[in-house]
Each structure stands twice: as structure tokens, then as C-alpha cells.
Image (tube, rainbow, N blue to C red; front, side):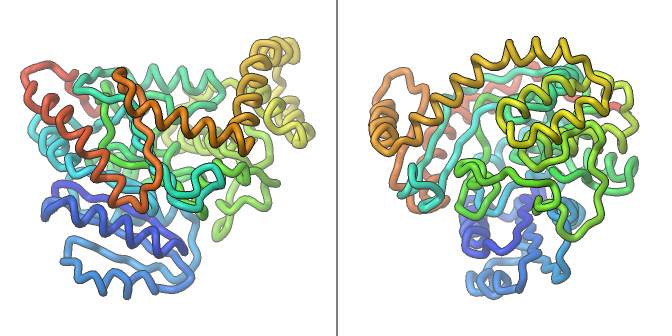
Length: 411
């Protein structure tokens, strides 16, 4: 058995998947397994991996028949042999110090860890704003804290499921989770994950069964974004469509939640998958905390072209119009500010100036944000980030006497 399995589901992004595997393999040792679940149109990635002469800790499975992305994700979890699992995308990477952190977690019987700081890498050619590849790292340190993920889940639902990245929930995607936590979901539901977004489905399901979540103020992975990824789609604003055109539905019959507007966008996918997770985990009381009104207001502001679908969902669930009007009034100023900021950022001249200003922040003594452009690939990105993160992790591990809350699985 391995200490840690890194799960990488992939489809038709062979170049990025190969770079991701190379990066992880080169900075980890025999305690780490790399599981690639390939549902591409062909198995050309296998030959590319074979040419690298990796040893047996690189586990490659090719699934010829087109399957839903969530099933490919679940298959990677099922195929993992590690005591702990970290799921990432095929354009992502991990920091080499993740192994030391997992060793520490095992020693201290910590089943889940959520990194609270994000390192991001935008691959060259992903957007016109970042033509040469761009690395960003938020300020990090050796501090940590614990939260009650069930209370955090209530807050997330009351927000209309609008802000998954900032919700302090258990994360299988770019988080660290002990394998038996996934097994608990499987034993209860008959599968490792469901819905359309495995990230949010697992965040909800895992958070229902943990009493205390350890959050550390440093990254252990690198979020990647390439032209072909859903993150890249988000950067380029191409991830909105009619529901029947959504890529998530390919290869599966699916029942969309009757509590979510019937069109495809990131927030709706999150809300739909959250509802499926609560249904399948038998958490009906939590569903009562979900705010359709807040989701409706966000959708009306961001996607007015889908007003018919939005209001059909609102009326079908007998929501209060006065509450909606109040929420729109409250939300509109913040939305307008976001739109102005986004417009300015996307203007070519302003974008160039914006990049120069951000580059200047590198020498800022506050160290709030590191941004570096001209990074060729995920391997180079990890080398830069690790130099900054490793001292903080060492400081964290040296202070093993402090209480970390002792996250416990609730049965």
C-alpha cells in the first residue's frame, strides 16, 4: 500500500496530462502512487507514458467507452491503493512537500486536511491576458486552524451554493483525504461520487461526516488552467450554455435538480450537485437551508438571457418575490463593481498595465501576492513555489506539540 495516491482523471488532453505526471513523479518518491484514468478518444497517452519509463507506482487505466466525467473521477478513487488520496486535474501539479504533510497527518491520525492558500498556474496560450504562462501564489505561512465543516456547509447552502472556492468544506479536489472517508460514502450511496461535479459532491458528502476540519495556510498543490480546461473556459467566459448542450451530460442519463434553473453555468452545476449529494446522503434537514432566492438573484444579474429558465425555477419552488427584490437590491452594487473590474482587466491596454503593476508586487515587502510570468510549464512553476512554501511547512511540522483539533469521522 502507498501512503498517498494522486488521482488524475483525463480526457483528450494528453500533453498536459503527461506534463502533470512527469512533474509529480519527479518530485515524489515510492510512497506516492499516481493514478491516471484516461477516457480519451484513443490511448495515445499510454505510449507517451511508456516512453518516460516510469516505474509501477504510475498506474494507468484506459476506458475506451465514453463515460461521464464524474464516473471517471470515481474510478480513479476506486483504483487508488494509497492510505490517503488527493485528486487533481490533468493540467495541475503537486508540491514535493505534500509527502511530508501526509506523513504527519498519518502519525497524528488526521483524516482530512484542507489547504487554505492557493497556488495557480495558467498555461501559455490559455488567454490573451496571459500569453506566456503565469504563476500566482497567495501569501502563506505556517499557521493553521480548525472549523466545523457542518456549520460551514450550512453557510454555503444559505448563500445559494455560490462560493465553493472560499467555503471551508472538506475538499477531495486539491485536498488530502484518507481513503476510508471515501469508502464511507461508497457504502452509504453505492458509489464514490455523483452529481455532475465530483468536487462539490464529495465536498458536501465528506463534510457531513467530519466533526473538525484542519485548514493550513499554505498550498500543497498547484491549480492549473489550460485552453481546453473548464477553468480555461471560465477565464474566457465560454462556460455558459443551454442545459442540453452541457458537456457533463454526455454518456449518462441524468435528472437535473428541480431546485436549480435549467441552464448550464458553474454556479448551477454546483447547486445541482450539492442537491444530489444531500439527497443521496440522506441529509434532508440540510436541504432546507439552501437559498434558491440568492441563487436566483445571482443568475438574474449574471445571465439575464436565461431569465425565463431562472424565473420558472423560482416560481416552481414557490419562492417569495419580495425576498428576491431585496436580494437583488443588496447584490447589484457588488455585481456592478465586479463587471467594471472585469471590463477594465480585459481591455488590452489596461491589462498590460495591470500585469506590470502586479509584477511590481513581487518586490513588495508585504509579500501579499507573488505573480511571475513567462513560466513555461507546471514543472518550472512547482520549483518556484516550493522554494517559498517549504520553509513554512517545515515550521508547521516542527511545531507538532500544538493541538490541531483532532478531526474525527462521525459514524
